Amino acid sequence: MLVGGTTGEGYSLTTDERMQVLAYWMQTAPVKNGSLQVIAMVSASAHPDTIKLAQHAKSLNVRSLMLMGHSYWNHSAVTDVID
Image 1 (cartoon, helix red, strand yellow):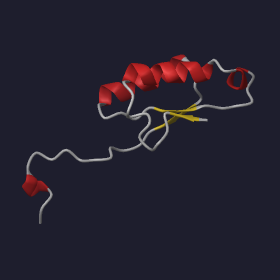
Image 2 (cartoon, helix red, strand yellow):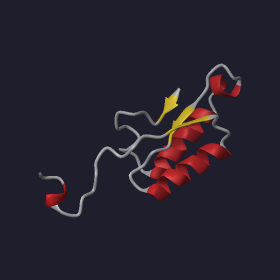
Image 3 (cartoon, one colour):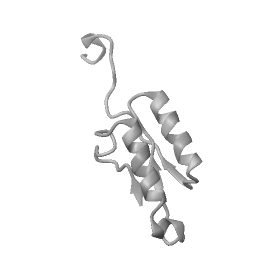
């Protein structure tokens, strides 16, 4: 089970909400009995939030993490992206 997804559902929640969702999944019977493995999506727009999510997943004994690069680049000037 990929908790936090890749199509924006995780990004639409606060960091605390994402932590609550992951904690909920880790308490479900299929996860507890080992018939369902969890992958936690821990990418966030802010680096400190990514670290917080990863540490939280570790504290819950999540075995796998998923990280994605940023979906946008923050440029300081329009000329940075125009030829």
